Image (tube, rainbow, N blue to C red):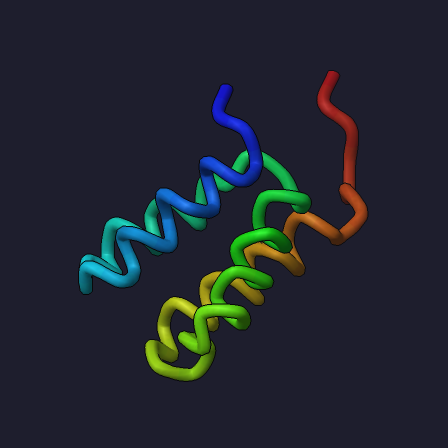
Length: 75
């Protein structure tokens, strides 16, 4: 499995290249909350927050989904 910094860096590279569809697909299958927070921090540091609304929405939505308590346990 890729390290947190590597995953965030790769997704950030996708965003910078303009391939937001691929970046959103990667954000939806993020390995952990830590990875998404690292991406969010990298976006803020690179001053890319607010440039692509769909990417920002995907990060916040999936961060909320990963932080939410599970409604049920698998059998």
